[in-house]
Length: 420
Length: 163
Image (cartoon, rainbow over all chains, first blue to last red; front, side):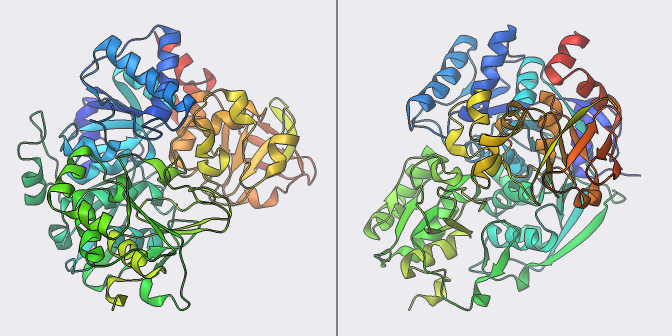
């Protein structure tokens, strides 16, 4: 029996010829990543146990969640990372001004790449499947052991094959694909499993689309989501990934527990209603207008240049609805700067958006856009759980940048074509 | 029977780690501090009234969402010795094993356990007895060396023992 992409990467890193679903294995890690919330307790534990990083070039520390520090305690979390990074000369530590959102900067800087195995103490670490890597979220204890030993245990996941047919059309983005998929299979539809994307439709997805899709694999319960290596990946990795890499492709007789098919030709702008990412609805099916108070455009899901380009194309020549605050958060300094060069930042400020420095901020109810009782937000982020962005009676509607920007202009959940 | 005996705190499907411990409390990783806010967004009584030994019971996909280990830590520091659910989200499951919080997965049988029931749960055998109703359930066993990690009381102890 052949192997799928996930099995190939896991086998290679376990030093085995082959693995199959259900095998318990120990793998060597190419990257071990943590952020200010998860790495600070890990570092405290490492210090307590007198453990050191196994390889200073493979540990990645990204202070992005509550930084620039939102309060005194958060400043303490950042200091813990900073002191550890200095003490051990950690190569991939990013100070404010260099830091962006972890899952935006790691692919952008080529710290993660095809065929690589990464664990990160952040659930959206699964993002790097977009570049044909295996990556998955873990907690602080796995981070401690990963930093100290360079190893982690895994149970090889059964794989779901997601076959994308047709091609992506104008006005549709990766967010519509993944919200549709989660709506289809449910928030635990891929629990303990991997999502392997395949089919002719993949070629029509940009790297930004793929990063958005892989990012939200966890919202279907998946361990990881992985894309094949193709021309789009090759071009993206050109002069980007820092080490020689070895992509993986599935064998023809690779095993899958089930196949799910999505016809990209039929996709329409999609929104996930509160309070689960699986509550997917087509915007066209919304009967009564849903008035909103806030829009957030950014995050590890949709904080890349292409996302801002889409938002700017909708907002150009318009103003944000007077009842709405629209917060735009470029995902990295490079995204911010290029958005400025291309005039997107001018467009946002002319439209009367708030433009923030790169941070996870409001996505997890950290800061920079917290909601009070009864408020509603259309957000390009990844979770709409109860209280996720503030008050337990506030509501988050998840969408891509087309819908988010159009909603900002109209003050209700809308598509770009609704703007007259 | 060995194991734990306590009153059931019953929750539904898809209990996410954001409600187990909201992000606004994550600037601390002190277990007692986290426990004082556990479940607050969906149940204000829990942190106030939970007694050591009480058992948390959830539905499907318990612990979905964020990888924050603060979530199982908050539950454990509340005095809850074991969590039972129809199924667990994978990162939460892994974190529970890694920090030494036993998690018992029993599928649809969980529907028979109600809030306030008195139950006994033995992580070593996976046997759960509902003393209020008289029902007995068998949890799915942990695979292979994952059992050894659980027996060691968590991943760090396991790694230390293995040298």
